[in-house]
Structure formats: C-alpha cells, structure tokens
Image (cartoon, rainbow, N blue to C red):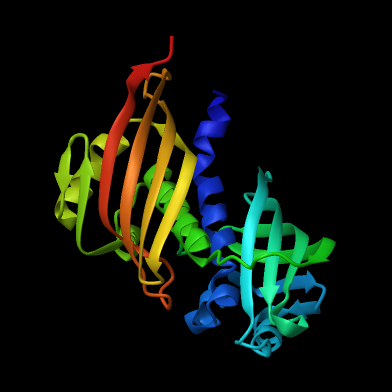
Amino acid sequence: MDETKIRNSYLEHASLAQFHRWYQFYERPKAGIENTLDILTPDVTIKSGLGEAKGHDAYAARVTKLPDTWKNAHFPKTTQIKQNDDGTLILEATITYQNQGILPDGQTRNADLSYAMHLTPSVNDPLPKFSSIEITQNADSTGGEWNDAYAHNRAKSLVHYWLALVEEPKRNPAPFNELLAAPFKLNFASGAIATKGGFKKWLSGPASSVDASRHAIENFKVTAASDANFTIEMDFAWNGILPNGAQMTAKTHHTWIVVNDVTERFARIQTMDVETLEPFKVVE
C-alpha cells in the first residue's frame, strides 16, 4: 500500500468522525445545538437549500427554528477526502436524506444530496473543524419507508474517532477518556485491559510499535437496543509501517458494546472484543 495513504489515515478518520457528528442534532435535537457548533469554526460558511449562514449565531438561529417533530435520517453513500499542502482538508460526500414531517399525511421525502466540506486543523483538539459546508440537492422523490440512521451515524463517528486517536503519531491517551465508559473492558489478543493505567501502557507499547498504521473498516453493522445502548460489529483491515520501513498487514473482527448519552460529543465503549482473522505478517 502507498506509504502516504497509511501515514495520512488518521486525518481521514478524524474528518469522518466530524462528518458523522454533523447529523447528530438533526437526527436527535435533544443533543443540543452546542454539539454542532463544536465542529464548526467561528467564521464558518454554510450554504444549502435553506440559504447561506455565516458564523455560529447565524447558523444556530436558522437550524433551531426547524420543527423538532420532524424525523430526519442521513445515509452516507460515498466519501472522499483530500489533504491540501497547508494542512486543511476537503471532504466530498454523497448521501440520501430522508424526512417525515415536511410532507403531509406522514409521507417520506427522499433527497439525494452532495456535500463539499472544508476542514481546518484545531489548536487544542485532535479533531479538525468545518470552515465551510456547501450542500447541493441532486434529486428528490416521495414515498417508501422512513428508516432511522441515528445509531449508524453515532457509531461511525465513535469508531472513526477511536481509529484517528490510535493512528495519530503522538498517541496521546487523554482524548480517549471521553470514548471509554466507566467501567470498561478491552479484550485485545494481547490480554484484557480494564484500567486507564493499563490502557496507557498498551497505547505507548503495542499500539506504538509501528511508525504509522491504517485501519479500513469493513462489514460494518450496528444493532441498536435503544438510543442508549447498541452493539457494533465490524472488521478492520490493518496496514502498518515498521520503524525499518517494512510494511505489515492483518485483519481483525471487532464487537463493541456501546453506551450512549445523546448530549455528549461521542458515545462510549463499554466492552471491546477483538478476534484475529488474519495474523500480523510482514509484506514481502
């Protein structure tokens, strides 16, 4: 695999964590507008069919007027991320948006949307912030069943942020605190971890044994018992670069039990079970 793709993977995961967070307030208004403003730069520009808003106040004034009785769901179809020379990022995406509430008689509205989103690095946060978002509608239709996307986007945001922190070269343990429940248990192949001290040793030890790594998410599935509890199942196709420049590969299966407070930035991992599907090996 291209070395640059591996070394920049944490930036892609951080961008995607924010992308999936973008839908939190729309899909669950009780999350609070603060969770959306948290992902936007103060001078953000947002353009959509509703018009143009510049800055936090203008955007908040616009979206808080939307009826909280509407049911909104967002299903990402494609995402592409590019890194600019100045460290900013461009995220382009296509999604299907579903709504119940705009149309009469409980009809479902379906819209195909495209996003052009620019992100800038944050000073004191591993996550970048959106400096501009432009949403274009490509198609619109009526009918069919409305489906809830909240658990999917909430889980994807958590997973991408976890991977961004695991892959980030500094591997700072502090940001993980908002991703781990109390208590938590991580059943890694190398042994179980159930304390912050144990996790810190793992992060500075096995997780830091490579210069860079990349996790591609495959076979992602989330099952929600409620907004407060869901299970994530997925595979990680892993690529790593050793200090001597050699590359390694592996594949693991993950099962996460997640607890969720809709008002927090992220859901939290209660248990993580990891199964090795393909052992770590050096690429010849």
